[in-house]
Image (cartoon, rainbow, N blue to C red; front, side):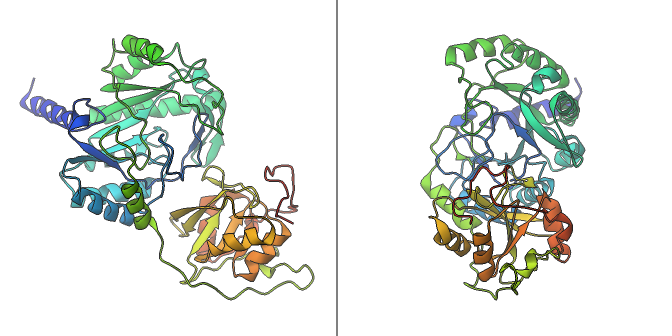
Amino acid sequence: MSAFANQSAREAAERLSHHPCFNQDARHQYARIHLPVAPRCNMQCNYCNRQYNCVNESRPGVTCAVLSPGQAIEYLRQYAEKTPHLSVVGIAGPGDPLACASDTLETLRMVKAEFPHLLLCLASNGLNLPPYVGELAALGLSHVTVTVNAVDPKIGAKFYRWMEIDGRRIEGEEAAAELWRRQQQAIRELAAAGTTVKINSIYTPGINEGHIETIAQTVSVLGASILNIMPLLPTAGTAFASLAEPDRATLQQVRKRAAQYLPQMAHCARCRADAAGMIGEEHMPKQIELLQIVARPAPAPASAPAPAMNPESGLPMTLSPQLRIATSQQRPYIAVASREGLFVNQHLGEATMLRIYQPGERRSRLVDMRSIEHEGEGSSRWIKIVEKLQDCSAVLVSGAGAMPRKIFTHYGITVGIVEGTIDEALAAAARGGDLAWMAKPGFRCGDSDCSGGRTGCE
């Protein structure tokens, strides 16, 4: 073995010894922090509920706030001051880090510049990972986790409802095959670059229970270093909600067979996207409070002038075919109702949460997630929601009744009933606000695609 190879092996061993997720002994000595800067995802998994703004659940993809890169660094500064045993900074969502590549890479660059002694880590589904392997390696990213639930497209198709690839939504075996092709490329190239690669596989009864050993054997050949077999966590609101969580004895047997090919991680705590501290520690209230304070947008004025009204319909002129949105310094943000964070595809009446964006022609930024549950009934419901949106110039939805449209407009918030992706809607708003080409024709409250009913809409 060459001197260079010896040095590389020593560096890899040292990295492993300091990472609490990759090394069971390190979990008792070192802390990690996840920076939740990646809200969007490029696929819908059948075990994942994309309603992620929560302080009470402990599962992947959940956070109590979403941060911009600048907010993430400020949060890291404050957390690092009181955590001398912090060794790892990771990005694991709440969506997929490389579906939000700009913010993810910007955050990693800032961390590397200010905290060069900390290990950098990232967890991804792998769908958009290959184009960024070189840049991640150049940043000194030491550890990457890739979730591989199947290496057979027939099995993989059972895990994923859809994927967004190169601006096109695909489903079924075609999607699963393309995902696995990209995952193979990424694992191979990461390993060749000297990155330690961990594979997460979600053991799912009736779906891939006889397939885990094959996954282990296959990814070991590609260069993966460790395998984390995670038991399915049945989650409300998902296609797999009715499946049973595997018991410990079954999981131990599966890990024993997979251990023929790769070392096993058996201490996974199914961490949140905003996890911090030692693995297994409770999600501390003070940490949640700090994270929410850092993420909070600046206060905005309480009111803004209302736009002109159409005298015939009683609705705002901005709901005519010339749908225009104009942001301002007082109202720089746009609220969006979306089921998964990719499309404008939720009616205002059924939404329980609104995503708050700062639009940009090249890149828009998610700045907040605001719950609008339990706000009452009738007009009082909409007035209470308006009070939460005083920094927003518009709300983009796939449908809204006459009552909320009149109330929102009265308080200076345009209601845009549109269809399409969030990114293209926000880019159009940033270019001058003309969204007429995205307007949804012929919408009526109570249409068949609305799961919220008409309560409070009319």
